[in-house]
Image 1: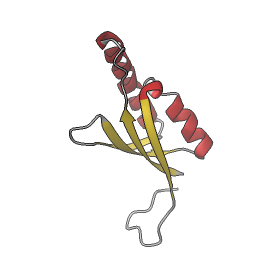
Image 2 (image 1 turned 30 degrees about the vertical axis):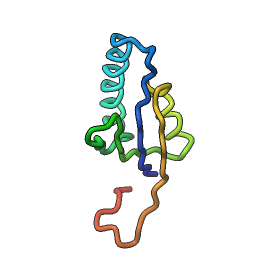
Image 3 (image 1 turned 60 degrees about the vertical axis):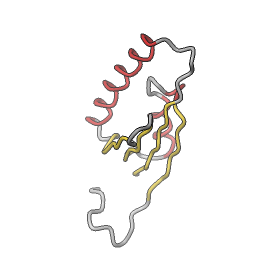
Length: 96
C-alpha cells in the first residue's frame, strides 16, 4: 500500500542544538534503512520550510503508523498521511 506523507517539524524552543543535531543524524540514518527496506520510496523538501512530502510503502495503515512513530524525530513532527489508491489511468502504476 502506498501513502503520501507530509511531515512538518516543530522544534520546541527548549531543545538544544546538540540534541537536534543528534536527532537529525539519527533520522538520516533511519531514512536510509527504510529506503533500503522499500518503505521510503521518494522524498521532496518543501522549499524554505522545515517540511517534506514523501511517498512511503507499508502493508497497511497500522504498519505505516508504526514506521512513522518509530522515527527519531517523531515527538517533534506534525504528520498528515494520505492512503493512496491505484488510478486506472496512471501511466506507471506501482509494481506488485
